[in-house]
Length: 437
Image (tube, rainbow, N blue to C red; front, side, top):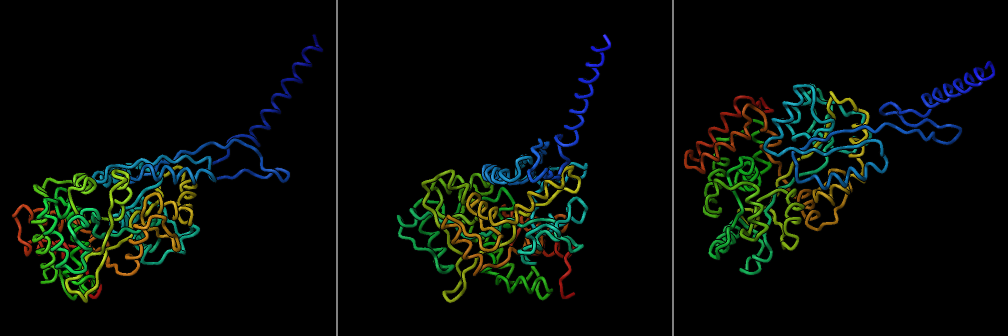
């Protein structure tokens, strides 16, 4: 009996020692730790998987980001990232509500400039100044997500650019050449309209379409970058003839818009263009991937907004879009930072350029798609800043939003271009301080 009891004790002690050994060397590691070497060989311990959520307003990017995350997981198999985008028009409200209650996604796509910076200034974001690869971006590029304290809170992943998309087949059918002047642009619109094709896929139902379209076409009327410098330094304002004329230009284009355009949404515009019911669309580069997916056979191209005079300079409008940040309340900041660091690599930049079909912010990255390459070339040579996004996206409501709602009123014949300009100036006066003052 004593012999049996002694044997049982030995077995129990051996089992206890075995469990103690698993706990010390084979159990789940803490978040962010890496397996330690053991005699020249890494210990094959089973790390606990960390699950991160990633917020965005780009529902269209789901497939692309799932591929990008898959590539990230080849080097980081224990970090699962769920890309959970919210509808564009609901994103700000959903995100702000979540952050105010101490939740929100671990990795956050920031609206560029004022809206994203406001989240940083409110303490919702983690500073990224020590992230490897951050030094390759210019100060101007990082300004889209730099807080008032001078710290960087977002990795800029893509540039956005607006230009005019056109249907090559329709242009060829009706003998239209790429417009080189403003008059040729209007002539192309007239030809399309005469042939029962909507010249521009356009709608005023969603306000951001109005500021985007004005941001693309307006610079050729108000004077582009020179006007931006003058208004931000206090040398002119939105009630100036140049800016008012740019609003009047938008009003004058209404005859080239689709019937009942005040009820036309972005989805309607896109459908109209990809189904060849419209010949042109003023839009951002981010729509390339979406439109090609909807109609792979669509023969489209782009051209910059033509100048008013033959000896003038065509332009595209650009800004930094799509910065990504880390939620200051995330329980897994170390893992979120790993993905943020991945976003500074050429591997990520190449994936973005080819999967999202957008110009990457990573220097030296080239795209496979010739349309993306063409837009990148325009962006690097004839661009002017998207004034309302870069400089006038603050205020309550923002000056950008005031432009949008006022132009919606104009298209409903409730406001004149002069009244639109006056409303925009009132909004700017409520918060904007020119650099020279």
